[in-house]
Image: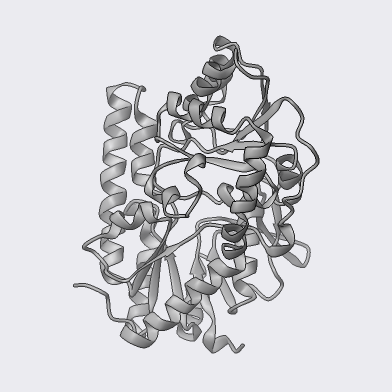
Length: 382
């Protein structure tokens, strides 16, 4: 493909120059590298001296522009066919996105706003139980992010969100919304065949250790089950709630193995190979990729019944009432039988085959192409 069909992506995730490679967060590298196989990508982002997380190389074909290189940025916008900007921050931190939006619109380029999580609601959820002052700051951050999201959405050609639960964020601000399904798995990652299950039910939870993730709900559910079944429990992640969760696990009499974040995909998939159930306890509205990470390795994701999960077509046996520890405990209890889990793995095969990383990017690219052809750079609503 020629540079004339390139996609310029504005990202807050930093990259690092290591020899002749650009490297970035392993999950982000996997995502943007897959997109680059379908359309040439130019990445506009911070350039860091070091990276604090697991990182991986960007594809050599991806062009990187430092976010403060204004001349190179203007030139790249002029050559781009599509422009993607993030919609997760408040007004101040969206300065680059707003600048790129203004310049792209002046050149008649279609601009698409991406929202992968409800950061505004997360600010509220994470500020609860931390005092009035902290909650007041959470409310201010919520208002800041929501205003900025809608301001950007009104001026973009379209908005792509991750999961049906996020569509309400731009309702009334932009009518051209693409609901993407978050999946980072490729066809070669799918390995659902398993040896006979051990008698101990192997359960894990994974994610950033913060209140929004709802891990306390998971621990409460498992406490209700500890007298009824043998469980091997693993919690993967790091974050501000780590000490509190370790204390809660101890107080509940649960033996939980706490692991630091694990590199993706290989080491993470190897750990999932040893799990029966992956509990998703999120209290927010987005649809995590972890659903398909679990399925592709033969583990079953146990998910809230919120819109982002219910819309996926998961079997009802895998859904429980969001935020309800007793409902989650009942759901886990219903999945104790290895034969039931085997049947659900078979039923989930079609869902897994349909939602891969390549399919996610292919669907989004087709939507951007259709949007550009239909309405050009005009905003979807005034």
